[in-house]
Image (cartoon, rainbow, N blue to C red):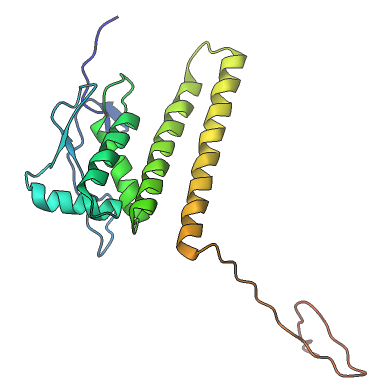
Length: 204
């Protein structure tokens, strides 16, 4: 078997997979008022343990953007989250994937966490999504036994369910768990009749 050194896979026109890193910071779809998501670069994109740094060299603004994306004012929280994301962001070769880290950061920033509790949940959601996609990719392995396919499918289903539950927890955090029920009272006088449902007046 030939050892392959890989930075990241990215898709070009025609859906061809290449080994060139995706350095395009511009969003694919124009979204007025929204900046491109914060990104990181890796000192060694093909390493098993790597260190992140700002892609444009402006570390102060970059660090502030990371704090805002994670909903925190704590540098320690940012460092911990980056390490957690790196642990989940692995390429098919087992090395850290710069693309996966930046995709996770984009998901986290889209969730717009307001504090560390929401930030931690957003990190969990991004990592759960990454893990679920990695497990689903293994379903396409040739010559897999029926038992193996069932086990992989079950693991993927649990991860996807966990992701949906995390989304629900985030919604409840932001709404306080409140549910709104609209109740309407209809008063009917003696001798009157009430009709429940949609009523269409006849043209006759």
